[in-house]
Length: 361
Image (cartoon, rainbow, N blue to C red):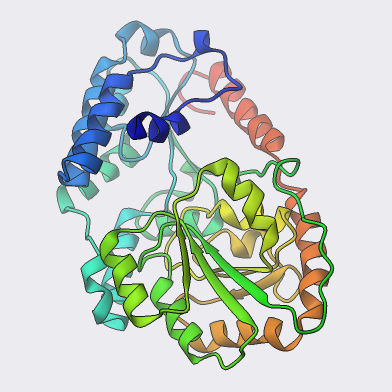
């Protein structure tokens, strides 16, 4: 069944089942409600996360050296930890929700035609996320962009630990290809196809480019409304839609440049993945880009919404296609420095420190 194929990504093959307690019914029920019944996603996920937290046994919390929860799904867990005098670490996947709220208003102002694709978060859910932050002993973020938004909204910098995500450089690797004069330059975007990810900026620039030997492909989840909008206004753009992770690993090396002009991220894992495939990257200051890309070496960093700089960066590769391979080699070398092993070691160090001291680490 289609629903079971979608839920397959919730399984981790490398971790033995005896180490994992799953509540599959909760997850399947939520997916059915959102994808098949069309119920409000924010409401459904809130109920799913609330039920999951309540099902965690008290004994599991009490005997742990530290408890790790994820943003938007830990407000009850954090409170239960507080009552048990248990350490709670909040692992956040995206920058501060109030910053996101502000960015959405900015996008609507810049691109009113894309207002239909923007869904502002209900203030009661933002308040829940802020309660998670308040009760956490420490907050783990993956990029300096995320860290800075939390500090801007009153979270003490001393409470925040940065642990950059990794990339499996043995799975994401360059394709053997030799660029020839006149070859098509294949730009690719990977991620949720919506306004927050900078799709309006990318399409605005794409329409203004004059070259004939270029191609733009969008890979990632897309709603029927946005897909129809793009087909109507930007018919030359190729839309692949959602791909299985295995398919992405196979297809990504076949492109030349990743363009990821996002307005707001937590990290953007596709950036090091594309770099590991030998693709230079054009991205923004609102991603992990500034942490791992040297401007002009592995790619280009621009401000979100700066269509002038985005166009200049894309035209650079169009005008100097020979630089794609050179910068791609540097991108691969940089990506190799960001391993999941190193990410795991940093988590291990954090957790060992948590076990040594009762109230902090």
